[in-house]
Amino acid sequence: MAAADLNTIRATIESRLVTELSKSPPIPVVFYNQAFQPTASSSWVQCLTSFGASEYLGHGLSANSRNLIVGLVVFNIFSAKGVGPAPNYVIGKRIRDLYNRVNVSGVFFDAPIGPQALAKPEAEGYFQTQVRVTFESIEEL
Amino acid sequence: MATIRGESGSVQFETGSGSLATVVGTRSWSLTTTKETLDTSVHGNTFRQFVGSMISGSGTVELVYDPDATGQAAFVEDVIKANDSADASFELFTTGSSSGSDSLAFGGIITDMEITSTVGELVVVSCSFITSGTITSNLE
Image (cartoon, rainbow over all chains, first blue to last red; front, side, top):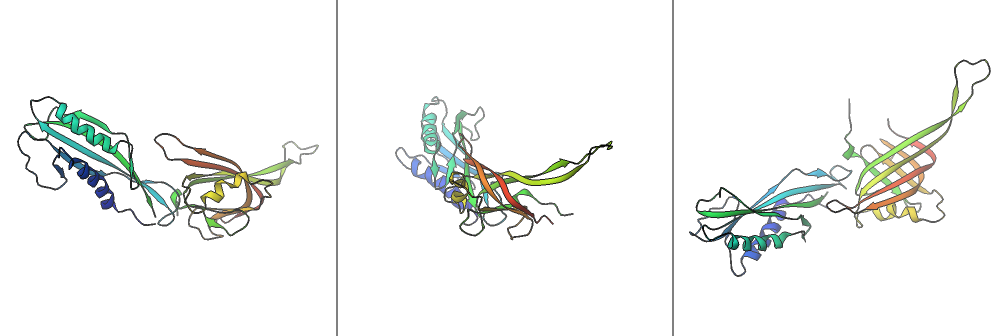
């Protein structure tokens, strides 16, 4: 029993995405705090992992106790503007299927939200949708 | 003033053939202690009067189910012990797990066990018990 390593949880989430989007057709992926210059009219994905408020799961202080760690992964999917939503939703399906109610190394992913189209894309010149997935992990102290 | 947060509590249990040990994964416990009373009112009394009589207790322990958690299996399965001779021991702690300190200790029988699996929630187990014999209070 040990305190959870949030970086390990983050890596679990992100590596799953990298593996999937490196398959054909490959899609560039960018994470927090990374510089990225997209190619015009191409598709790419931004993956943002955040942790929220943990909850007590049971009795005990720093030993024989458990916490529920919760978090949110936001996938911003960018694709070429003016060609309809289909190419974007194809990527959205790949991401959604990747996390839909699966348990990966003790990280439980809930049913995804989206893809939802954004009226104002965060990157100029792209069509953007967003998939959001909440997740939970149990920390055993 | 020293208030105590619920998460600092714990539950220790032994099923009759070992020593008290912490049940990992408990998330709540309660104990209700009741003293019966005997009516000693007599002719001439205007107000009814009583003396205390038999004392008993009952309560619940709730766990977040984990079949691998230390002590859980013995605790949740005690309800199916046949011909239960009330040889199980409980110690319910408001804080810490030092025997005889901040706790209530007693022998008892687990009378109900309910396990619940609900979509979107953790599987939880709720056990009810009654005390048998002396209830020792260490709530100093």
